[in-house]
Image (cartoon, rainbow, N blue to C red; front, top):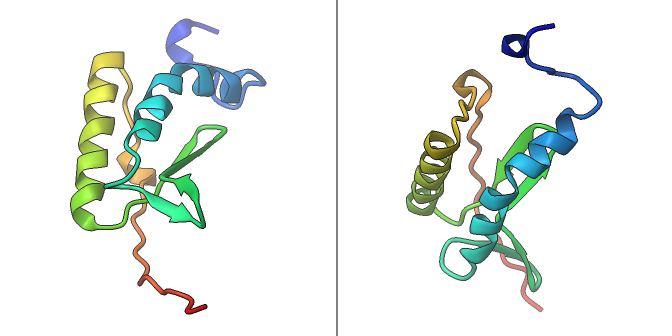
Amino acid sequence: MGLDKGVVGGVLSPYLFAVYLDDLSNELNNIKVVCSCYVGEVLLNHLMLADDICVFCPSVLWLQRILDLYQAYAESHGIIFNCNKTVCMTFEAWVVNT
């Protein structure tokens, strides 16, 4: 198999994905207060599993800023995100009164 074919589905794919995108994950972790969501006191602004990324933002404005960060990272690291597999979902916030 040539390098141009890639190793999609290979045993090392999730590990290599995690290593390659570790800097991006760290950048997202540094954006704490303004454009992050919290579950209790736990910061939750993104999840990465295997070759999937899920981003959590409190507003459309911040989602666009995060997507701009992704785009800049992708351009500087030679990554192409598959827009055909991209989905955007919105939820209304609710607060539990205690």
